[in-house]
Length: 279
Image 1 (cartoon, rainbow, N blue to C red):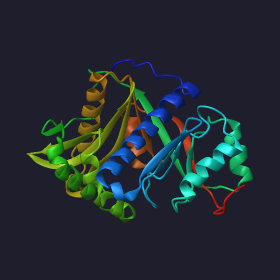
Image 2 (tube, one colour):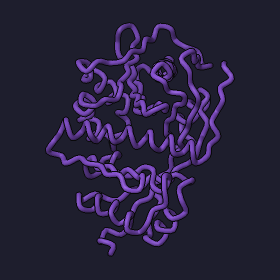
Image 3 (cartoon, rainbow, N blue to C red):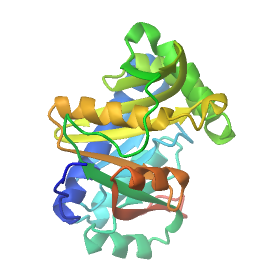
Image 4 (cartoon, rainbow, N blue to C red):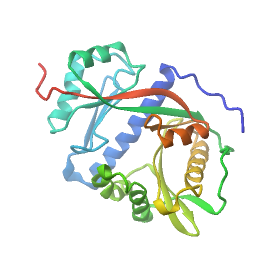
């Protein structure tokens, strides 16, 4: 394994990672607008914070980067909150612990409550990267063309079938991905799709998301193959580091750490408990 130089997990790295994830979600919202123009999907940027509306209840409907790029004022937070409330959505912020203290003061004053945690992990990459885990050479990974998005989406949906809370979101995923500029990857065994994953390139950061394996094909190395090929592909496109987000202590975190990822920081998702306008 090559001796990669890991960037120090400071505010500069946090800005690169948060900017990349915001970029990926903006791309998704823009694709939603093209696929379903009647849904009123939208996004705004306020003081470096990206607020995304992908529909009420969508996991994309939230903010990224709150207070990471500059302090947040009460007036700016009012604008962000109104963006969601005017669309009938709850107000969620996924907040990096390196954010400016103004964020946490406002969150405390407005009685937000924590509802979820996520670990943001990262690692350096290059085009010759090889993961340490054993590789099933029978599994082939490739980028999916727009004419195969239905196959990719069906595979992704089957891979996430044990999570009914995202069923509605996944049902329309193929139509959104067909209008997205992000990259979709399939892992195949004996010519049959068994795993799916996504990749967004934002500057020199590769954002990995959406990886899943169909239940009948698990424990055969599909995730390792899918991860390695996406990392190598991203490196050929000029990326120097990759990132992903996982639930703390999850199997996904364990697997990513086995493959050289480190935790940069743990984010907290905050929910506003006040549904009235703040003057």
